[in-house]
Image (cartoon, rainbow, N blue to C red):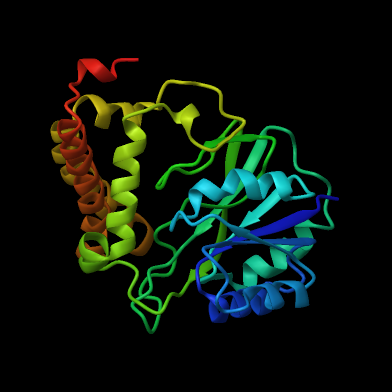
Length: 285
């Protein structure tokens, strides 16, 4: 029977963490919580009251750099990685409870994906889109380097499940204002730009030893402006197509939000690279 460690990275989100722990009761065997800045809200007491282990980390204002450390601390191989503003839907709760009592999945299964509906600050506006969100994985069957917007890279396959992971922060999740002006978004783009000047092995890594960047990141490093334009157009079209297939509706602002963020990310790298006096040839692997 596979045991599960719930891993959460928080940043002054005590109330949201309390909701997550309440809604995910009986869905995991171990709890590991990391706090990205000094714990001014006594989150530690919430975690310890739930039987979990609490780690206060050096501030990075991003969660991805902390993940390798968290997975190292986890006693179990199966990682339920949720954000503080998320919680499993009813169907996912039942599935997780049964998963922990079932035989261990085959070795070619690296993890599982789910739907992650859009939230407008008051209610979900989609039912099953976007989908393909990785929520549970085997830590010895994935690789990762700790950069913002980088997900786990599976050794095997990710099995899609028809369950919902609720993502309900206090704000709208798919607004252009979030993508363009929110401080956390600007921080993430700046972090990515700085990382892309070096190698992925210079970051906090989990089972990652390749000094070369994956193709989607190398495209930005070599052709940032061209990549910005291409992704703005192509990702928007792919998003609209995916929305229609899953929801039979279009959500134009949601479809363009991610591509706008990625285009701005490319432009930020182009600016940082030029400010450092580097050229494309300087970045050749």
